View 1 (cartoon, rainbow, N blue to C red):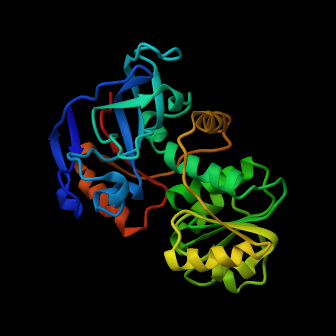
View 2: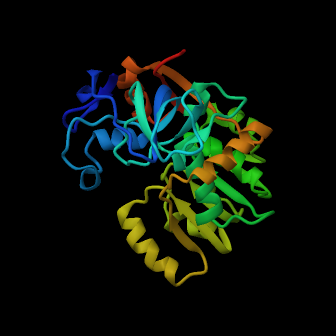
Amino acid sequence: MKAVYFDKYGPVDVLQYGEQPKPTIKDDEILVRVHAASVNPVDWKIRGGMMLPVTGLDFPKIPGLDIAGVVAEVGKDVENFLPGDRVFGMIDDFLGGAYAEYAALPEKVAVPLPDNLNYEQAAAVPLTALTALQALRDKGELANGESVLINGASSGVGTFAIQIAKALGAGEVTGVCSTEHVALVKSLGADVVIDYTEEDFTQHEERYDLIFDAVAKTTYIDSKPSLKPNGRYVTTVPDPKDFAFGFVLSVFSDKKLRVMMTEDRGKDLRLIKDWIESGKVKPVIDKVYSLKEAADAHRYSEEGHAAGKIVLLVDDH
């Protein structure tokens, strides 16, 4: 099969396009003929060797966690899918495998494609939408009517977080983004939008029940004064120094620091699918590249200015 892979860690130029073995599925897995995958920052962090203790030194590696496509084969213990079914999901192997014509997906994390999305739209959903949901609902314990601020509201995670906060019953939702993305964030349902090029939300008098930093650009220490009593600050990849000091402060404060690690829960993705089909949530796509252009997609992602998701079109049939 054709795939994008790398034989060593390094800059974007280590990515290659060529033949790789088709995955062999386990009894509880399905083999998906991938039509589209998406690019997440974790993909190029893995490629760059930033997660070496987890990813190890076995090569070659095929990046990517999000896929949408058609079931090609099913393992003998698979009960809910048949060849020909349209599915999407997040690969549960942290090492990836999505940037390829075929990928193995455990049945427990595979979900039927939403009726109102095509493959490229569906591929933009899993990791970022799951991150947003679990950060707000589980780590943030967002309650009905509570106020929430989303930092990085135009990012892949942020665009979902604005919508999911509303779907979860949040009260006032504030989005923080750059000038060029203010209109987008408003269109997704933000009640208030703060342009970070002109204002620093940590200098405002406004207080929030929950602050979710979807892009890990703030710190708990700086954001703590902006939390209401019993407020929660949730981040994805905290600064190590801030986390160490902030965690100690958090222990002795009613304002808590919590770190988000996304889990590949099929039941959560099914909930997101329901919201998508009912019109409460929609993916936002910034750019679409072909699989051969994965290196260009990584370069664009590393610039940090994407509004929504970056998608790789593996097969447009």
